[in-house]
Image (cartoon, rainbow, N blue to C red; front, side, top):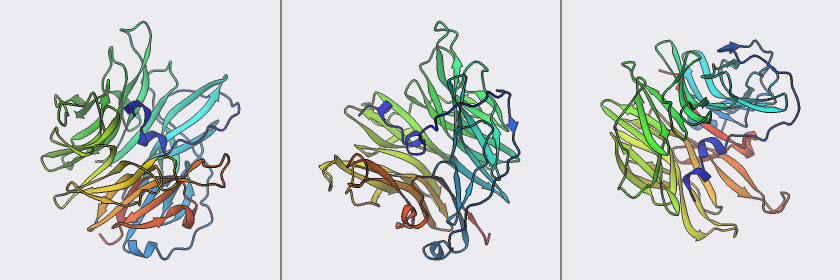
Length: 391
């Protein structure tokens, strides 16, 4: 499967477009909306959340929902939007930030644009170009009083007869900074991380080659694991002291490989798989992702897919491979406890047509699974963030 056929960071959270016409609105930079929203009926707090005692656990999921310890709040609506959803969550003091996207139909033209929510109130992020209508916010980090969001935006390519390309963008306090332009065939800024010293690292890809930017400057690292891959990408970046860790995938026909990079040097974690998230704590490197075993799965619909945590390179399977697809999408370590969000694509005979796959989301705490769909109706669990109450 070619890399272009699968991008977990985009696929698991996108919802079907709610069809309908709406009025057009301005594409001005950094629009902030005041909205009326209220939390859904609180779910009872108790087991299994008692395992996270002393911590508040935030998850973005089910499209427009933010969950805190199992209680869901709807992210604020944007005027004229037909749908909206969160992708990444970050907590800074008493403020909760979410990066995501919204969709609208304007003059029969579909528009998707990047959004940031602060305490559920949305702000439409500025566009790098006013002529195009497709941008996405994929990762968020708050530091030093500034809000950093990475993603991509369509951008006019002056070197190719007016063609537009997907360009990696870093938004700082709502204003866009295009990281690379020119005669390229597209790129994304999939992850942003800010060090205690204020250096801003962004990981992503351009022309299917993995790249890292530091303070807006693209680094010369080649990010090659063993010389066999034809395509590479970075989906998550984490800085620990002087070491820069990045995870993602490269493509060696016929499949993607899960790859971990440390200071640009690659290590293949799985020959068939994907690495989605990296977190370093106490000198231990945690990577969440997935692995595919080419044996038939338990329901006869494909291969065996496993949600996987790699701890210093040692593989720990979190699912049993009954279904063809499962993955850890986000990892967060707090006070020695390892929190992971993810999903398993379950095939249910009751769905129409029979055998249609449906996501079942999980939160794992130290490897113990909480079925978020059965407990709280969460079908998609994206980014997870943990805030200690006792710090």
